[in-house]
Image 1 (cartoon, one colour):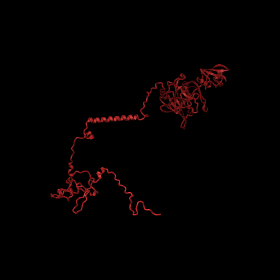
Image 2 (cartoon, helix red, strand yellow):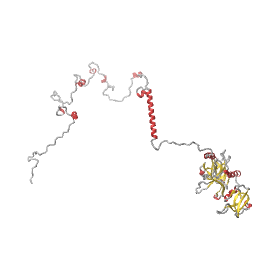
Image 3 (spheres, helix red, strand yellow):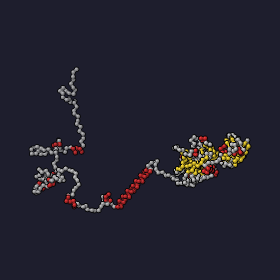
Image 4 (spheres, helix red, strand yellow):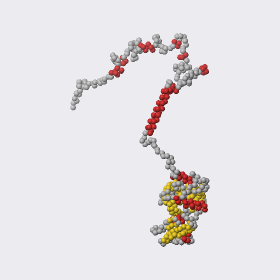
Length: 510
């Protein structure tokens, strides 16, 4: 294979006519403003060092100077005078010695830094008055003192303008305060001022209202605390002051522990917080009544009303210390009258039977011995027992109180003799069985030589009435007998073999 010559060159190596030439030089357009600032002056060609060529000096060499010639006005004002080309600083004539005077100490004294041009700058103390001038200190001339407008504004201001400025400032402040109040008041839809409708004080407390009755009777009701020796706590009940000498009427079951143990302490706590020891005067277990006495002067005494005047539906108020909450009141009505109630009988004690006032005023543990008052605030009963359907013994709206007529009668006997004698008929009875044609107290046995035996009452007889009292069960028979006095002759109605009989019985004493 034979090499062929290159198509773009001849054998001698010269460039052929078909070779590409150099790329054309790109010259961008020149900004005329920049050319006027940075371009060569008109008519100048070549480098900048050819801008100015001075004539040759004495040695035949040219001295290059790029600075333009000094204007004639500046040269005339700041150049050296003629014939003084070798002098750098122009000195005063006195310093040059032309007038024969010595050189000015301003230039020769270096002890004073203010006169020494080469002295450094340092901090110095305050100016000192020469000793010879200390006694002759100049006094500043006294003139008119500047006023407040001159101090504040640098020149005099008319009082009217100053007052107007103050008024404007107050107006601006008031407007700003009102705007702030409005923004705060309407800032949220949930906040703002409330309009409270207030009722007149004591509008619902007329004489005879519950509040008025409570205010009058509360000081006459005390709380009784019964504590055994060495015990941290004990039993608690209520009592009613019935005599100015300090006699307090209460329930027998409230102070039963103190009756059986002389060392047990009884404390009476009055409405104002006064605490004093109470002594048991007498107690009657059969009627659940007792009297204690405190040594106080001028106590508030409860006014006693007539329980016989009560009617079903009358308003009553129970006052006492339920569950150790002193000075508590509850209100209600008389639900029933002459309700035979048998309660107690715990720990081998005989049951208590009495004719009670039934009320729906809430009575709880601790109310025992407290007062049941009518709408006038008069005592009509002594709170004694409740009917409860639960194990905790809470009130269900059925409470019982011993009528005041009977309670005061027993209290007087206890205060006089310390004990009470009850009328007795001399029989044991039981309620008739359900479905019997006759309701009453069936005689189970008759005490030999007793009042009933003497009147001819036999076992199996059914007593239906004693005096004015209807007898429907054995409890009502006991209540009817005890409503009379021992030795009193009362008619007794009974049923025997389908016939009704009436016998007179002279009641005995237990």
